Amino acid sequence: MSGARQRIDGAAAYLLHAYPYSETSLILEVFARDHGRLAMLARGARRPRSALRGVLHAFQPLELGWFGGGEVKTLAKAEWLGGISLLRGEGLLLGYYLNELLLKLLPREDAHAVLFDAYASALAALSRGATSTTSAELRRFEKTLLRELGYGLVLERDAHGRAVEAGRSYRYQVERGAVAADATESGQAVSGKTLLDLAGDNYADARSLAEGKQLMRYLLNHYLAGQPLQTRRVFIELQDV
Image (tube, rainbow, N blue to C red; front, side):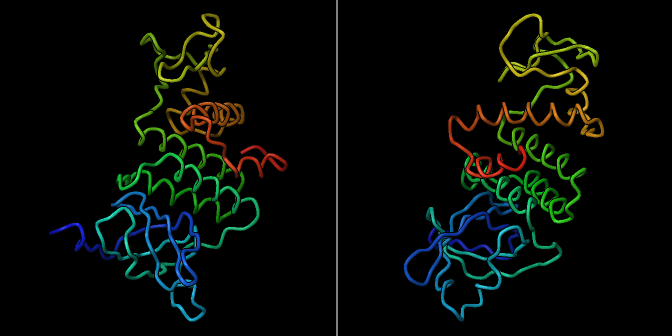
């Protein structure tokens, strides 16, 4: 089948961003479970009577169909699947933070089903609005994102292959891992317990949660390569992401 005739139906997806195209249409950035990040033209979506106006909302599970083999696909249909409350307040801003990470870091048309599921889980936590679980879900998502991009963290062993000790202090270095804190001044300071808690997805300890946030920020800043996060700029007046 030629690329021009390619057609996909019934794809689970989320809308990451939309911007106007001509007077009546939209260009969409979507994240599909089995197809990755895609750009799509939604013809007529800005028309007052378009059926798409009530469907194309960020942070809501969608079922999409599209066709075309070029860089920008053409949206054929969209259906809202429901099942998640609308994000509000802090949860809404954090949702945009997740979307911005995907838009800036995820290559086009590279499927990441595990990351898609982590994103859906994070959105569900944000919709519930429980701060205690929200931070943990954000850290899980960030860790999954780095692993899926090929930048997985080595957390249970240090850079020399030795087992990480809970009571020891470390510095985490990009693309190298944890080194004893007294061996170097570079890298992000982190305790051995935090590294082990991150490895086990255990976020019950407040210190581990705080240090985990700082470690993820340090690593993401590196892989963003200087690209600023607009959501972080907005959020900094209220609370650190």
